Length: 159
Image 1: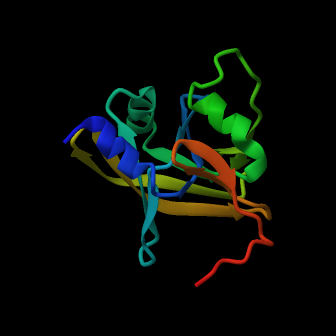
Image 2: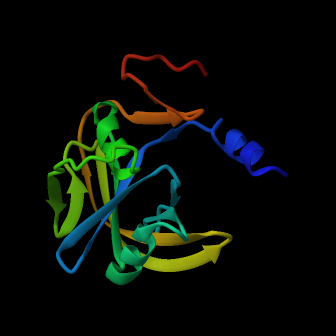
């Protein structure tokens, strides 16, 4: 199977956009990711998937913690900064959730402690035990078919 076919197929799955953050010895690191899901309610677990070439991989391995920040529809530029799509330096202000670095204005912030790690293919899966959560009102930033989008609270979903 061609890599492009696989990527195109995966792009047909609409996802929310997150920025994963961690703190290593007082230095905050972040990356944009859409490979996130909740795993368990009891205990409260989530999973993120980080590529073997991403510098974030070693940062999470060192810190043993990460925060998943669900971006709002107004935070597309932040997504682009942490995805490396905007090359010029930009100042980003981080918040704090009981010691975990967060993206201010994110509609959800979920801080985690690494509970387990699995290497699968060219990615590492980090299972995170949820430690703290902070929620804000707002519409989510979405990604579909290689493009950003938004879902408004006024939008009625057909079921």
